[in-house]
Length: 442
Image (cartoon, rainbow, N blue to C red):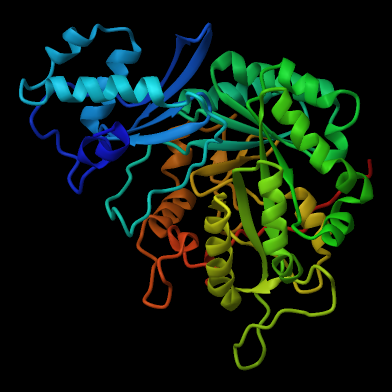
């Protein structure tokens, strides 16, 4: 039996995280390793939670959950401890099997890999226990100035956050982005960039991103060509496919961000076929949604604009259609919290700014160090430059957020939809609510 078939027997946490059978445990925190492989080095990030469970990320790509026993064994093997010595720390009845499976797991993860690190809270449908996280797994960091950025990145790493995605502002000077990525890579972080195809096609930007160690590039695809042109211009539409291929040629992973409005949904089937031709395997999807209600409390979306939003009541049916289509095309999707807009708000600026965060275990970091949770209002949970991570993580804003997303929000009406894993998509309380973006002309 391969390790993939045996994961649930020891790697995937069971209903009780107790250290059954004894054996070593690992101290909570973030650990970074580099192992030689095929003449190069494979990066591993091991994030151990207070209850001993862990997340192992290989090659800034594949991620897998580990039980306390699995985390302890994998950590010691990555540290270079001989297999026989690791066996000596384990109960004799399980030592040989656990070490053999962990060794095979390390050798197979990320080899070869073109996958992107996709993080979300584990589904309460499968495991209702409190995840007891020490921090999020990813930070979406706005880059506007370098003044405090290095300190911000160091504090994120010290908190146990392995993954930084940089969101350059419209007025960003390129040199600031290169420096930000270099600092993140020096710390050992996974580094990604959200950028437009038009910007990437200019001045050898793809080559520069590869040169400073960028792991992946996130681009927005509206699914419909007229929407892409409406939101980003004809120049971006023209460069999208060539840039995707160029990103891959420079050994980075292209990932697409898919904003959903009714017009985009009409083009879903043909667009996913196109993505298959582009060899895109991973996408992040979010719905643009309005809380508009009439006098009877029924939600209605405006119908005039090409990019008119959904209502919350439409989202379960939309998610069913999207998830079934993605499965048919072998596209792995991560659902992001729905993005709330006002009924009369121009959608283009909102989409260009993008969602608040890339998943439910991601935070948004503003240029001044403020930390926003991925859902709810835009109230900061604290500031990295003036608060400790523990103060931020334990504050009321995050306590309320964790209580909501770690609860089982599924209901009998939803047929096991992935979008429902963290929160009910029809409930505006689970959307991200931000002020309309103020764009700076380029």
